[in-house]
Image (tube, rainbow, N blue to C red; front, side, top):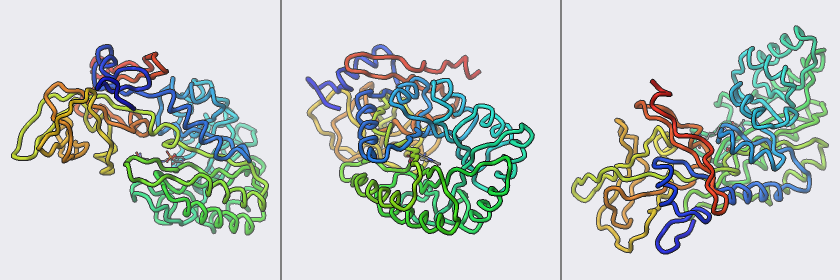
Length: 404
Ligand code: LLP
């Protein structure tokens, strides 16, 4: 993001012009950044050519998934809806993995019919259900089992998934029991050990620990896993001083692991691919003064972008037109929704704002539109993709008639 003649640009397009055409609030994605993220991710692990399954839950825009697919990515899905949208985007079923603690029989049947690469099961009951369905269809189904490695990923507690108190995966004892069970089954083929520590992880050390746990568990199981699915979770820098995830150390740890275990690696990244490609453009409706604090009331709200309300996370806000006057007031950026958590951030130093000014909330490409809702009967924003100087509408703004 840079300014040219005081105008904020996304790639070569003035944000001001996007607003003229698409109004606000609007989600906007940069193709250049998407491409950079994908290439960096691939480069970080190129010595063992992993299968990269983009985590659809992080951004489920069909046109964006189509772009991601062109780089050879598969998909990590957690529902029939995500499976269908991945197939519609043209993703090869042999590059799709299905995760989640509560797959219904309908979802399992669908996944089997579509011949996806793996169903990653998260309990013994699920394995038994998959086996039952596979038997009734006279099929052999490829499955994985998700191990809960009981590791603290050192991230927000709401998005940590790899500790024993979390609902995800199975403990080692159950894991080994399922391996034995599967080895006797005629309808399931146990091909994968899967694991996912959590999200927005900035420290590589929990991953190193995780690989040690996998090594130990695989040895005990005495089973050959064709795949190890290491999940996603690699964090991004939302704030200036955030440290960066050390891909090189993670890559080295995986390479050491692969010397002992000849498996194909699968990754399921979401945020690291799309997090920093997205911007939410919004307009100031009113400014309400309350002593030193001024409420900047935006036309974007927690229903459009949930992360600050849900996790207290902070996202950078930038003005669309730069003025060189600093405000003396504290600005609290809020949405119009009837909840006190409908608040994006509080800033002490920001340029002086006026009503109708335009702003951009940054790094909203992951868990932005996919977590949005129609709360307060608010239609979902439009989504557009910028490629150089081209603007492509990739999803229309919802209409009120879609809701009523
Ligand atoms: N694989 C599995 C099994 C997952 O549960 C997730 C995310 C991913 C892959 C992708 O993780 P990523 O690479 O994006 O970190 N809404 C929260 C994040 C929830 C993550 C849920 N699972 C947020 O906005 O921070």
